[in-house]
Length: 111
Image 1 (cartoon, rainbow, N blue to C red):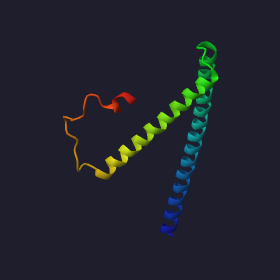
Image 2 (image 1 turned 90 degrees about the vertical axis):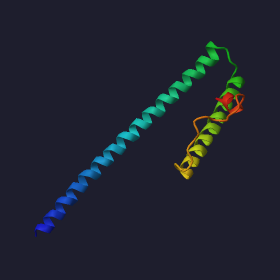
Image 3 (image 1 turned 180 degrees about the vertical axis):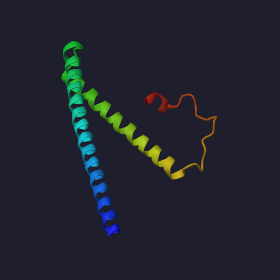
Image 4 (image 1 turned 180 degrees about the horizontal axis):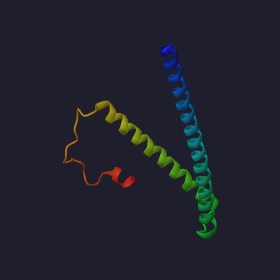
C-alpha cells in the first residue's frame, strides 16, 4: 500500500512539473511573438527613414537589403562550419598563439 501511495505522489509531482514546463513554453512563445512584432516595426521604421529622410530609391534599398541578407547567410554558414570544425576536432589541435596569417588577408576586410 505504501508503494502505491509513493507512486501516486511521484505521478502528482510529475504532473506539476509538466504543467510548469507547458506554462514556460507558452511564455517563451509569447516573448518570441513580441520580438517578431518589434523586429517588424523596426524594419518598417528603418525602411521609412531610408526612403523619406535619406532619399534612397526603392530599387537601391532593395539591392542593399539583398546584399546584406546574402552576407548574413554567408557569415552564418561560415560560423556553422567553424563550430562543426571545433566540435569534430575538439581539443586535439590547440591553436598557436602566434598565427602565420598574412596582414593583407581578404577575410579581414569582409566584416
